[in-house]
Length: 577
Image (cartoon, rainbow, N blue to C red):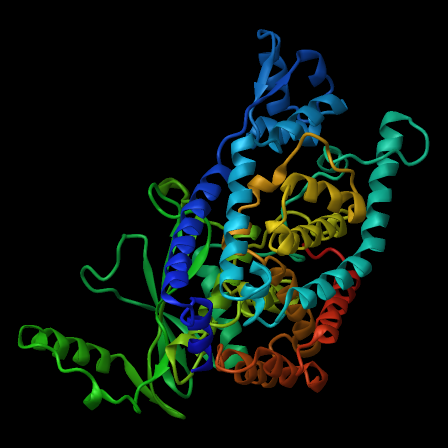
């Protein structure tokens, strides 16, 4: 009830009629601006103009050679940001100038794009003040684990303080590489366009050889993992006529060894025209307790709708199951990804390691929905605080670092195993982490009271942040913030992913790192976290799980403590991508 009431308050239920109308108007304006901002964030940027002489010595002898050949026949070569040519130049061009040009083009914005973002941030600020909050961040964080922008900044400050020394050491390594390459004086400055050249990004890879990672192999491994941890298995299920929206969709039953059927997962894994991009978990129907429903008190349907209502009730009754604690509605979720479909001649799809990571991440959300057993559907499974919801999904990624868990991918009839890539320490990992923390700090600054001050300038704010706390100099003339799409969907809560990575790291180390298939620890995690969804205070749940009662207050000191967890784990586990 308290969650419902807070939602009503945030929606202006206590406002006088005129102000409530203003709230509705501002909310609509924010939705329109947000959609426009997302469209512009992904819009193509103007190309960089590269000369033939600037492409000498490209390390890429495939695409690089073709690009050099093409540049001989044109006065200027146009390279579009985000293209394969642009990525190749950033990683392979020994000369600094073409990399600088591509970087500047990739991080440019039109005045209209900057104005659109600032209009969105200012509209959010006005909306927050309308309901009595000092800023949008204060309004957005009141019902989150962080509780306030001040607590978020305590967490981020701790992260920066602990990450900075490790990131500086990594940056020093890059500087030494640049010094050797250019034969300069000691420790030349690493510019933003140097990062990919002196530390080329490499795809993640498993730590041990594995068999071909087909869809079937991956789901067998997931089922074996859940069986070991929770006593839960995944079983393929037939679909009836018109039950699914595409022939690619497969249905899985989730079955508990004691309680029986828990729910269903529909998987739609391959990319196709017209399908949503990215990976996601959608709840079609949440779990909830139903045996204490007051159906007798429901409004009676009209005569013309009575038959449909009876049909609906009969259908719902068939999708309920008695378990310890009552009768529960069985959940239905959809798991979407955009894996590449192989040609029919090549047999079943074999996933890349980053796709396996994505699958495990999304299945963490799905199992949160399946195992969650709460009184009400609005707090079931993944319907919890934004800065808590990623814990189960990120924890699933940790299991893929364990050779014990990876052995679940193999079977007795595997003819051969194959190595997928190389697993090694990434010297730039801490630089990237530092950059992600800065983005979370920027998100807080953009949603602070400063957004409504005269002369508010998002580009100047970004430049000041780099000058005060960055490691790599800000490139004058750039305005990358207009491509920061998370500012719309995760406004004032971008820190959440870092926050949940910290908690997941701690849970992994304390409960699973030594014995990742330990049933006792799995049951404890299921009991303390997964079953409770958003029905209890997440600080209390985590404190109970980790036997850390000092976290119960969820205050600034608790946020600082979580910040210390993350850095401790990053330093202690080399090579984690």
